[in-house]
Structures are given as C-alpha cells and as structure tokens.
Image 1 (tube, rainbow, N blue to C red):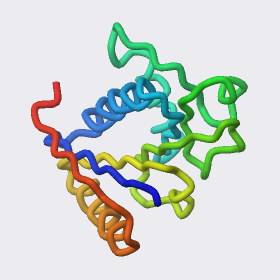
Image 2: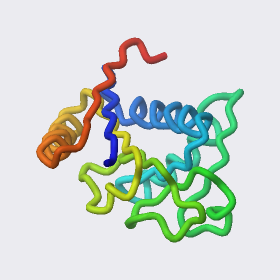
Image 3: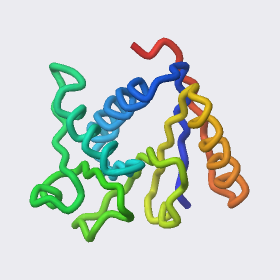
Image 4: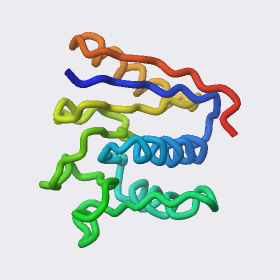
Length: 148
C-alpha cells in the first residue's frame, strides 16, 4: 500500500514551497529512489526544472521534463499532464505539487505532499489528507519549523 507523507511548512509563499520541493527532491534522490514530480501545470513544471539546477550552489540533482529526450536517463522526472510515461525502471515515489490527488497515485510506493500556510494550499491539501485517510492509506505528518 502506498505510504503518504505530508510535509507541513510554516511559510506562506509559493517560493518557499518550491524551494522545499527542491530540497526534498535532493534527499529522495540521495536515498536512491526514482522520483516523479507532479506539477500543477506546465508553468510550475518549468519553474521546478529551473530551480533544481540552482537551488543550492553545491547541489546537483540530475532531472528532466517528462517527454524530453533526457527523461529516460535520469532518476528524477517532472510532469504535469498525467502519469509518467513508460520509464524503465518506473519511479517509486511521487512528489505531488498539484492541488488534487491524481487518480493513479497508488502506482507509487511513496507519495509526498507539501503544505504551506497559504490559505488555498491549506484548503486543498486538507481535502487530500482526508481522502487518503478515508481510503485507508497510512499518512504521516512532518511538521517543519525554521526551514532555512
């Protein structure tokens, strides 16, 4: 059964949420997981792509946009249109940055959700939490303070 982790940030900005997504992506990659970052839309996917190149001067997280020529050769892919294409091997984890839970989320061993204190994000992710719990998925909260 898919394990779901909610990372709860004290910050209110989209930038803080995306910065944490980059740090979490680096941590997940270091642990050897193949990861699919599911963005809300193409704009967010491209912003994540850019941020992953320079979120930290001493970090290197090889990644590619879904559907690009490089996507088969990296462990981290970023998409926004649906489930990852037939990557071999397939990603084991998904970082869901979309407001909704994708109906195909259960194909992953792990799903991460990031909540910050922006009212819209709080509202949509609260509903996601309830949905996961109602369906019987194990949900673990991680309250993060003093991120920087």
